[in-house]
Amino acid sequence: MYTYLALGDSYTIGEQVPLQQSFPYQVVEVLAKQKIEVAEPVIVARTGWTTDELTAALREEGIREIFSFVSLLIGVNNQYRGRSLENYEEEFTSLINQAIIFANGHTQNVFVLSIPDWGVTPFAHDRDRTAIAKEIDAYNDVNRRVTEAHGCRYLDITASTRANGNNVEYLAGDGLHPSAKEYQIWAERLAPLIGKSLKS
Image 1 (cartoon, rainbow, N blue to C red):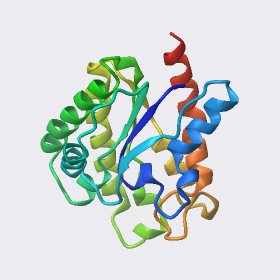
Image 2 (image 1 turned 180 degrees about the vertical axis):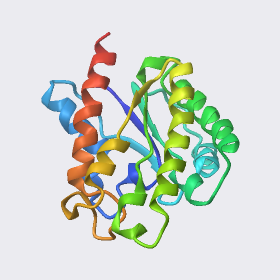
Image 3 (image 1 turned 30 degrees about the vertical axis):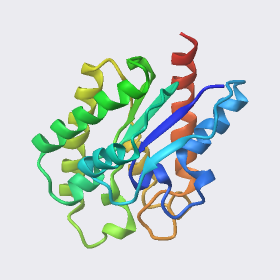
Image 4 (image 1 turned 90 degrees about the vertical axis):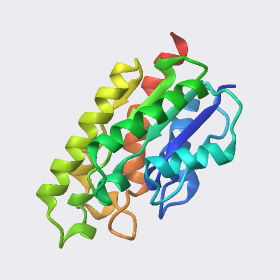
């Protein structure tokens, strides 16, 4: 049976939805339908975490085991708090190196998801949506470049969040975080990439 470590923030823990409807759990469900058995995901994520807070949590957790594959989705709170791109690149690079260690050095089994655009949601009705979009794009340019430079896999989910971010069916009750329906889109796109890497 394969094992899965999911690293991130509110988008990984599934803020406002039952844990079993978060994208890591839905990934496991999709893989099971493909006859790929994966144990319950180990999730290290919390709403509000920035890159340095995730790093500190991993240090505290002291995880020693190796996982079949790892997902990483982090950075929205860096952007929200106005952190610099240089700081993000440095800390994100450290996290992706840590993720590769957790995947036993198998870079193809580390999967980075792009940062969703929260600026399109009802929560951001009084914010500068254009500025948020530009900043999210800049952050995603960084994490994509770092991911590809390390030989890891990258999945762009930002476009989906922009398409669905003002649709109540794809939003949780807070008008900010995704609903299970949006997480399902991510899972159905991510699972085939994972399955392909595991079989290669």
